[in-house]
Length: 574
Image (cartoon, rainbow, N blue to C red; front, side, top):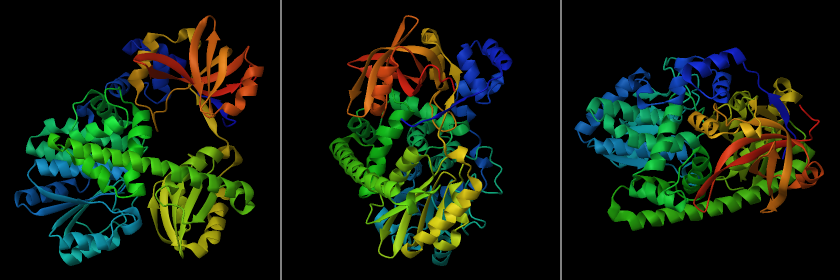
């Protein structure tokens, strides 16, 4: 476990008490809502009880009217429409919902998702040419295209209409397409700017369903959109919260198409209550593995499968995803070991505020995950490069206080291409310019990052004695989920707490134990904390505990368990 700075968050106790009284809430739940900026009872109630009615009018998105009219005309005239997606979960789920919606409306629809190693990232002129040759007259991009200037020009030259839907940061100029739908457009006044790519695609589906009088179809599309939204780690507030909360409920409840059912089966989630953690760490990696290790079309075909007659085929595709995910895990583990060795043995790499590390032949499908692992391990922005001949392909991940895309823009002259978000981005550059890139991005980081920003912090939401953990509190916490970016899982603080059983090492990395305070006992698990066994043995009579609450299912029983965030000596009340 990292050495964390405990940051006890302040709360306006008066407003918290007023909110608890107004909505008859557990005091701790009211406190958490206030700390999330939801002290107003009406805003808090919308947060606690999201519904499809809370989705904004999709026609408020700039470009939506032109896009929907063109799509309706193409459906009516039976023109061939192509959905051009991206090879991650966000792009695959976007492709699935928009293709399925247009087909249900009577459209002639195909899809194209680039393969990472063969086609590269994003909307490319070659894909436009390929689709045009296949008789496509209208292309809709999902989760990509906002910087696809060359592709838009090629579409115009070929007489192909192009609609771009995306959520990535736009450049100063927009592609010359028939319509560009992106809430981050500088001229777009849409109230929710943080939609995932699948959220933007869902707004197109919502508009099409509304205009066709088919609004009852929307919940089935929200269910798939929830997978992409949770996988893309966007803030779980506003429309993203509506999509995630309602979609998870539908994923847990069913019924499902044959393809989704096969995916849930192979993930071990059939019949279970599915939460954001299970989507992020069990469903999403399997869907992602297809695009990372082989072809994203495996996952796309699986999620598009609706006919029960193809159950055997769906199970075969789901098993392929399982197999690809195992290969991905092996590649990722080996790459992370090599990257960490370079960081810890080469001062030219590890002694900087931004870690820029690369290797010849590193699998491009896993460099993004590896970059995330390095951020977790070192709490520094990380850029992992796969070097192939004279070209380096990079995946970038960041810490909250460092704008990665902004930093890349200051080195833009070094890249063949780049793009992304503040926290995650991608780039392509000449391999020979990597040392210059490392120097320049770190010169910028040295100017904008302070040492304190490179120390990992643990936000503590509230003190909570173990005896205060009641069914009423747990129900209230459930109403705050799903948890993720923008709505973090609450972390509580209890002191002093006794260790009455354990710690016992499991799987060589984790610790299980039982805590007791004033006669109340809870089982607990501390992930990746095996090295702290000695400390816990020394202080078992009393520790200072930071924890969150989890439900655990075992042999048909569900019980509450503490997930240990950090443990301190009792005198350390930081």
